[in-house]
Length: 321
Image 1 (cartoon, rainbow, N blue to C red):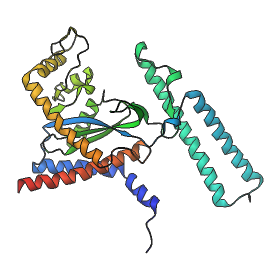
Image 2: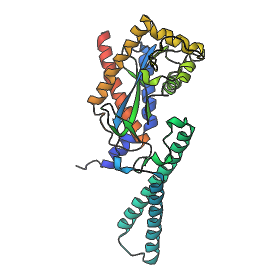
Image 3: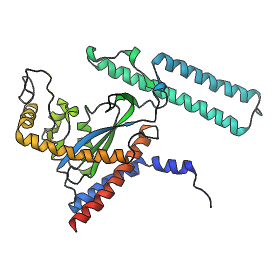
Image 4: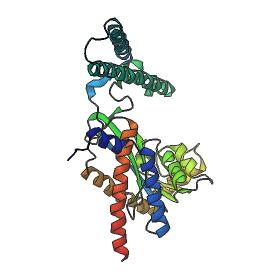
């Protein structure tokens, strides 16, 4: 008749990221050995999920520094009260007050570190793309979460969950978290597959948001040898995006010609099948995370991936009977 402690359940759900990540690798590896998954072709897509963060928690650098100074002063005040009157308040109340102020100070310190990182990244960008220090804001609740443009056109604190799946079996083969757009997350997902399964996929299907020349060139190198199917963007009305451009590498030229061919366009349609995985995630509650912190969010995503794969494995076995 003893109830299970809420914090015990919550900690169990989010405290074993490495174990869950290894389970995903073992699960897919077993399906590969049985031939239920081939991983010759993998599709990748991002799904933006609301974070457990409020818009009002975002602050600019001056406000972050001011809040940190106030938190440090509160810590010193509590220590002084305890030194002058050790009997002031109950032990539990003092511990709770100290813990709350200490955790707030730690969050503010992480927010300032994140602000410094964003300022360095902003400085590297071209002048026309820079926001400037006065426009950068970081959340005091979860510094790792940025405000993203959502599918409905609005802007909210969100996590861009990257899912890679076999288009035929719809088994999830890789997961990752991003703080912004899909741009630049193709190469890391390919590297993740190499780390998990010892080889790269033969073909990778992604939408136009992943179009990064360096990633496509790297994927076409002899070390990777992965054929990328990604529609090129049409940036000028008079330019044909399916023709090689002056100054581009041979790998990029071949990619453009491939995507302009009927075979390339037909192959790219296979990517639509991975949308079923995203729809399934939405149906199972991927509308807003109820945990904070990158590790905890990743744990929730891994739990979903494992449950999804178990159900897909059951369906695949029924088809082979």
